[in-house]
Image (cartoon, rainbow, N blue to C red):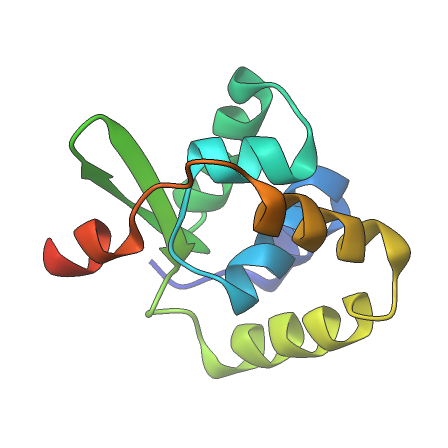
Length: 120
């Protein structure tokens, strides 16, 4: 399925999805629990937004043991990767996005990323 620019920009227009994508641009894969912690949102809300991003092909998921990890889809078109890269660059200067990164970095007992990488 080819990514529709309207769908892509609609996904970026929603704050929770945008904040998730900014984190995934620089730090993937991330578990639902990590995104929930970093964005300070409920797990059902986070899962709903991640499902929306997955359904339009922006992210992909991988279940490892009892966790679901998300990463940007490797099949994203070049133009979409470029947009995400530019948005992420701009987000580095924004306090809200910086707080998301700080909360993620401070999360206790983060899942072991090596387990995800080993299962690929």
